[in-house]
Image (cartoon, rainbow, N blue to C red; front, side, top):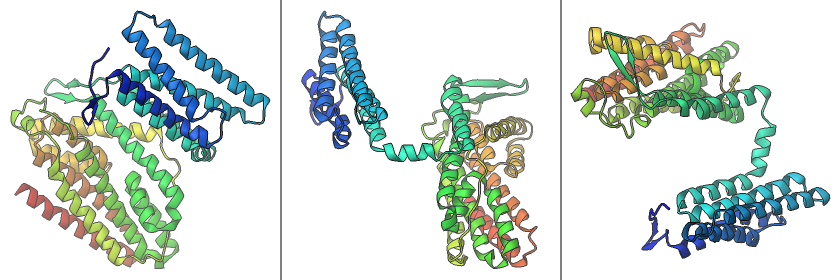
Length: 442
């Protein structure tokens, strides 16, 4: 048995008596919601089930009694659960509720066994998550019943990407192109794709719920998934209602802020815990770690965008934005393809033309996907092929490209005031980011 010691104060949690007491307490915690809901099994029943599992597990681990005793206890809990389910079918209680109680009893048995075996954190986690599922019953049902067919399909596709493909990928690999060998971290690369797709799903839910209540939600959270989509929506608003120019400009500024926030999250989040790089550049590899150099430049863009939007927008207006789908497999794979192309060509450009070659690649890719360019720079930084200042400059160049392309799209509007304001404020964002870059580099 694993003799790992987890302590509360000075009391070790691997002591038998403490583990038994903890198992009973977690059983009471699981039974609390069932008792509050006035089900047939409540606090006492669930606590006794967890205690029974703890006792049987300790007997199996510390005596010659076989595992059959623990299995027998589990079977008894299952039989009791079946009897409760049958009682619910024959009585007035809903069959689904009886089944939930039956399964919860089996979970309580498993929690007691985990704690008694020394898996303290695992047992507590299962108990807390199970209790949360029971408490959020109404919210979860309303969420599931409200999903459209397209939303259900998108959720399933996302689950495949996140929970099926990701675990199958190797932690480390290398792409041999003859002239250069590019070190890759497939799991980290795929996790970035999943993270960007997950942001899109969260954005879809928020915009669908609050999109009509304020431009801040529409602009910022819409920009997390697709800042270009925000520009397209605002162009249509301004065409139909010229007086909406002030809040349309604010929406684009907030979309830029969201884009910079997303890039900053990628730059900092995916470099946490990065160790020594695996590339051939020893100096670059020795400098790997959290990419703190990106915080000030991207933070400047975010703050300036919020400040201008807050001072210039007419917040009495509101606008909604309809998103077709929360997530699409095609979009995720397209992002992954853009990212891989940027990574390969960025590495080749750096090998053939030095750092300036990768900078040119970052600028070009930023017009398509600033997130893809950012993830490329992060991966090369983690591999030791780019230093912290070089990776920061590449991320900023991609961010600049994204800001410029939105200004170019806004310039197609027939509303002179709208396109001029977008152009002027975009220049201010670029100047603020450039000043921050100088502070970091110099």
